[in-house]
Amino acid sequence: MIISAGKNEVFSFATPMGVGLIESAINLTRLCLFNKPDYLIFVGSAGSYGNYDIFDIVHSSSASNIELSFLRDDSYTPIDNVLKIDDPKLKNETIVNSSNYISTNQELSKELINYGIGIENMEFYSLVKVAQEFDIKIQGIFVITNYTNKDAHKDFISNHTKAIDKLIRYLESKNIIVPCETSKNKKDKI
Image 1: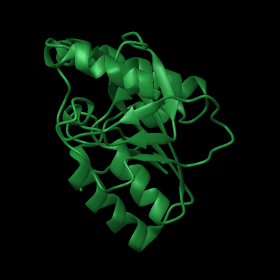
Image 2: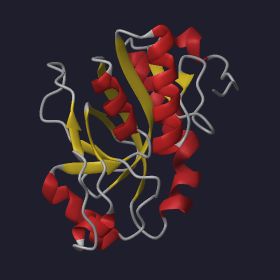
Image 3: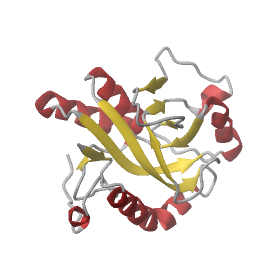
Image 4: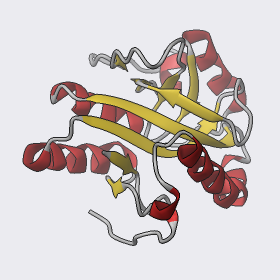
């Protein structure tokens, strides 16, 4: 089953889960309780901490929930803040960091690269956690729309349409979706 965040990332071939950690966790849990999928593919956009370029496509089944304050020793967490779903199809993958906030401090967010964390997406950590709880394999396929700097939002907005088109073409080229599935975006929201 293919899922996405929703809002401005709604696809005819994907079921929207909601934006951010909370909405996506609630809606994926609801889906799993009533119609548990065998495998999940989350598609969407992401910001790069510096190792990936705009419009790169990144696959992952590993996620983290590390706030920038953690890097400055201004916070700690009792949760397991790095999750991995073993997927033999994915080797040497980057970790996707998730937060309900978008990073705009380029120098601080670059420190995440030292931990193997390469990109950020608001939903992926919660989706991996729910998938883990329901014993479902999951992978994310992301297109980079921006760097995590002071222009993150402006660049996201200006690159989003082209990035989503590139993501759709990539999914078609890998036979993850068929071209006719992309002819019309659905506007449903959970």
